[in-house]
Amino acid sequence: MQRHSFLLTSAMLLAAMTFTARPSISQEATSAWQANPDLVEKLTKQRREFNYVESKVPTYTLPNPLVTRGGDLIRSPKEWNERRRGELLELFREQVYGRRPDTEYSLRFEQTAETTRAFDGAATGREIKAIFEIDDRTFSFPFVVFVPNNASGPTPAVIHINNRYFVPLATAVEKPDPFWPVETFIERGYATASFHTSHVDPDKKDGYPDGIRSFFADGKPPEDTAWRSLSAWGWAASRVLDHLQTIDSIDASRVAVSGHSRGGKTSLWAACEDERFAIAYSNNSGCGGAALSRRAYGETVERITTSFPHWFCKPFSDYAGRENDLPVDQHEVVALIAPRGVYVASADEDLWADPKGEYASLVAAAPVFGLLGKDAIETATMPPLGQQRIKGQTGYHIRAGGHGLGELDWDFFLDFADTLLK
Ligand code: GTR
Image 1 (cartoon, protein in one colour):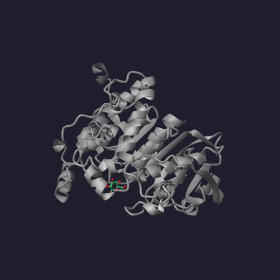
Image 2 (image 1 turned 90 degrees about the vertical axis):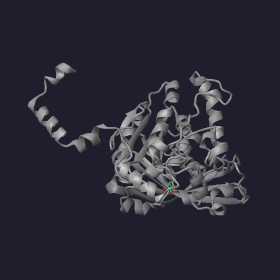
Image 3 (image 1 turned 45 degrees about the vertical axis):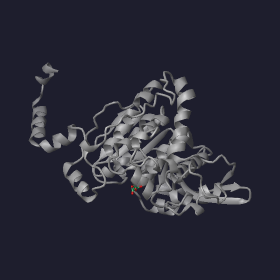
Image 4 (image 1 turned 135 degrees about the horizontal axis):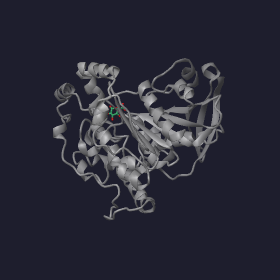
């Protein structure tokens, strides 16, 4: 190292001098992300009942994903698959997201619109209706799929869970949308599909009668531990995947699921329940998503289960103010997706979603990836703002700006997908 420093060329010296002459930039480029103290102060003043101060995060011990309920240490992939993964999945079903029904149903797909020349002929787009039948009752929701026209073989795909709105085929073709940038996917060699969460299960406290959960329960009210909206939306992503499996130009073993915020909570859980998903993307998912519940930083279990009682099953609300008693924490959602890919993204100003807790969760799952013979991010300190960190099966970035999902996030997401799916 020492000797190399003598070999600096004049150009490098100049670059180094320019670098030190602009300390704020050099700091931004090299030091681990930390919450902006001014923002912490501002948010603390605005919402006194929530904690934004790092030093006030309660002390906690995370449950070890590699220790069974009975206290046994899991030592091999076989033990993980046979003794631990199922147990952990059940705990999340019972305590957090609820259990999906096992009622039999039939499903068919009906094409309602098509364009074979989207984006100057680069893609074929189709609007599809998923139609479910139980006895003589039916339920349906629409989704839109695009596949590249000029790929040399089956392509990977991304299913985006859209928690904001439905983007019909015609709109997707005519109006670029950074929340679901279809043309970007096509240019980068990916197929993509998307649906709107509320078409599956209305995203409101009293929406139950009109959603898929009520359809499955034949109108009966949900049991305390039955699935709630997040799980229902994730289930819908699996049904879209059922459709992608029927398309020859898509390689269904290389399909990622993505979502923002409540959609990000959903995509993580979708990939826990359905091992066909090759990658889960969580964007600004926060509480009940990637962020550790025990940190109680920003949004808490109490707040989320009162504001959005339809997202989580009833038992989760019992941990309001007593997160330490949870038999699980959110790093174990990441662990359940191992050895597949998991990518977590945060935003600098989105302290409500607890970027530090989102990152910590990813890192705390690394031992499970390790046990399964895969690399994952283990570095405890966060990367600098705007810089992507990828190691093996996991990736992370924290972007400048607030709660949202845009082109920069997607570029990073697809860079990660390129490493695992291409
Ligand atoms: C917020 C909620 C978050 C997050 C977000 C969103 O109001 O507190 O948990 O899900 O909504 O989905 O945009």
